[in-house]
Image 1 (tube, chains in turn blue, orange, cyan, purple):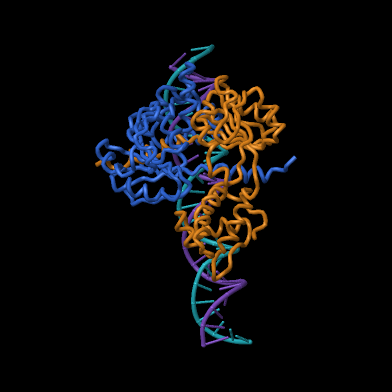
Image 2 (spheres, rainbow over the protein chains, first blue to last red):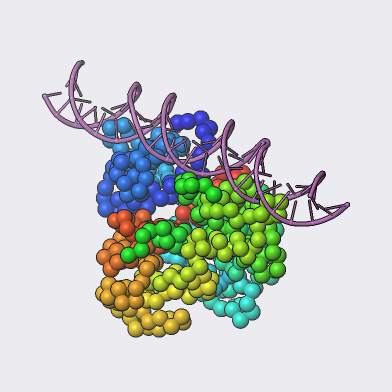
Amino acid sequence: MKKTAKIPYAAIERLALYSRPLRVLLKNGITVISSEKLAEYCGVNPAQVRKDLAYFGEFGVRGVGYDVTDLLREIKSILATDRDWTLCIIGMGNLGNAIVENENFRNMGYRFVAAFDKDQEKHGKTLPCGLIIQPVEKLRHLVKLLNVQIGVITTPPDEAQRVTDLLVDAGVKGVLNFSPTQVKAPKGCVIENVDFAVRFENLAYHLSKVPRE
Amino acid sequence: MKKTAKIPYAAIERLALYSRPLRVLLKNGITVISSEKLAEYCGVNPAQVRKDLAYFGEFGVRGVGYDVTDLLREIKSILATDRDWTLCIIGMGNLGNAIVENENFRNMGYRFVAAFDKDQEKHGKTLPCGLIIQPVEKLRHLVKLLNVQIGVITTPPDEAQRVTDLLVDAGVKGVLNFSPTQVKAPKGCVIENVDFAVRFENLAYHLSKVPRE
DNA sequence: CCTGCCATGTGCAAAAATTCACAAAACTTT
DNA sequence: AAAGTTTTGTGAATTTTTGCACATGGCAGG
């Protein structure tokens, strides 16, 4: 294993990608996989798979491949999804609801322990997942009380920075921002901006390049 | 303007990013912006902004900066978001609903003209946006009839590839896949895989690297 | 009309990421 | 136990992307 090689940012994202087919293979009882096959499933180069994994250790067996169970465990451990995280969410519109109710995230160990909204109408309402929508004024108190580690922002864009500041002030260490603005935070707080309208725009761009029939 | 320089994939995504503050500036009556300011808003390097824009033309005025209105129009034109796109969506769970109802997407010219689900219970239900949920069996027919250009997949992962094949077969030219699997399509169809659980995993990774207090 | 100023556009250098190509290692077969 | 096969792990080459640094060109003020 390499000493302290710099790890490309994209390598982390790919690690998450690799874990998807591994889960399926595991369910189907396949016990071993080669970098070539795994690369094929994920649409990347086999050497890339090996190099990405090599940043973190030697997980394979030469001449054989990777043990599916082991590799999945290792990737989970690297991505820190082998443990539970406590999250809160701010902005209970359609997207907020979709995220907080998402089965998949729950299974990955992301536990939403509080939901906030600005709208008084919504306060006190119980969500299907059992959480009760709280006023944003209670954010600071509840974040500290419930030991929230990550804040998820699903508010309109003009609220996003203010909410981020609230979260940082309350001591949250990570923010996932789904609104179409880049929010900023002092270091000590990790920000992940997710703006997925960008992906629509990307697709539109590529489609407009293709000769229309 | 450069002849046919290869355009970095990431440049397209940044173009979309640049458009966000431009919209705000426009609303606030700011008419001119420098690459330095715009870069600051987006958390990138000023030279990067200029270079990204230069791939597509000369939009600025030396010594002055970029006209906000013009630049926004140019970016929209490049990203092909100055026109309407017709989309359909498959999988009307929470996420599907959130996307189809999203105000923001509607304003950007993404028109959902059909919504599908496998679940018989849901067939015939009217969504808030006015669409009626259709059985997947009608996909091929409706896609052709309504001239759908883009298919959006919000089904569980084990359905995603099958739905993609249906879409391709029906003649759709672009697919936006929100399920946590990489789907594939023959060329002639542009695929954009959006798996945003990856972003949670990314955040978890970076948080686990930070010294916990 | 000329001079000074300022931010763009871009050639080029540096950095980063990806891919190649092969030696190293483990398992299988003889 | 040796030879053969297969697939990993990785140094080196290649490709791609980013950032610097400055010439270029337009505007403003005199």
